[in-house]
Image 1: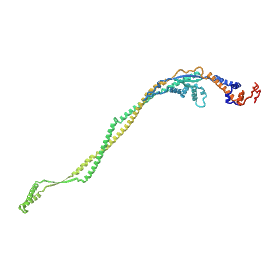
Image 2: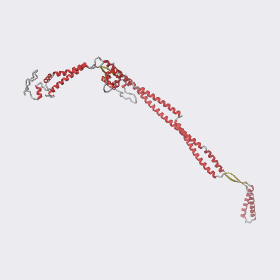
Image 3: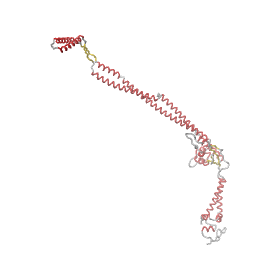
Image 4: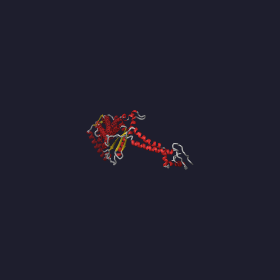
Length: 493
């Protein structure tokens, strides 16, 4: 028969005592075996000594508000807790553990791993894992102190390893904050200044080679000279075309103009002049007489006879006419103009060629000037960029100097309070703790044994327990005969 949890909780002390008394050996064994095993482990397990050291993380100006830049912030650049956490991460880093192992020597620190390497992974991975298992880094609450411990079977070895670990850590700590920011910026500024000086020399060389003094008026002068040359060229071309047309027209006209001309010249006669004057007077007299007298008037007839005689005499006198042949003046003029036009046309071809050559030269000079101007503009743009970069770098250099001052303070912000110490008393195993834990396990084991016996037993040591289990009254009970193992009386219904 099994007993329920309700029966167990309501069981009387007499029934519980009966169970304990009946299983006293088992319960006693469950109570004593764990403390005995714990005590044996204290003597069997090798002692582990713990070397310990404290690191003080000092706080100073690096936690002041930053005033570098256009505006200052009221919050600190970092907090004390952040610095402590950063140092703890550095202490627990794999790189630091590996460097410590390499400094001490893997064979000297973990000879067992070298002789029996692990099946999986490298020996260094196993060594780092073992090293970090023996190492403990923990901050002390409400303080700036970091507690670092290292466990080893030999106190001297624990002290030596921890001293080496702290020495390597402080070196790493110094390297982390000794960034040399200022030196880096100074080197960059030096390179930028050298590059700017080279560009300035290049700029001077370009000006000297291209004979550039002031490019704007030089360009304007060349453009004006080219425009003037183009104007003169066009004038020469137009003049040549005009002269060619004139020469063609004069040549055509020369073919139609006669080369010579005939002229007549009359000699002057004074008698003829006298005869003409007398004839004029006679005709006037004839006209006056004709108006007054009849045609047969003797006076009128006489006048008319004188007129006829005078006319006959005048015809006898006559004037001398001289005929001469001479070159035609128009032909000479045409010939002269042809000669003059041809003389004027002859140098125009050379003048046109010269102006074209001048224009090409001016164009080449302008192209050379523009190429040089482009190089100078590119050169000046690079110089301006370098000047802008140098200005920005100088601002960063000032900031780096301030930060480097703070970093220098952080380089000295971690101080080892005292050398590593490993006490003569081992940190593990501790006899008192082991025995106490074994005793607690023994008590728990004995209680568990009693509970298990009550829950799984099939024998009832009291009539009350039987009656409670069966739910029927027990009329009588018979005690067992000591040593016989059989009841002396049976239960009665």
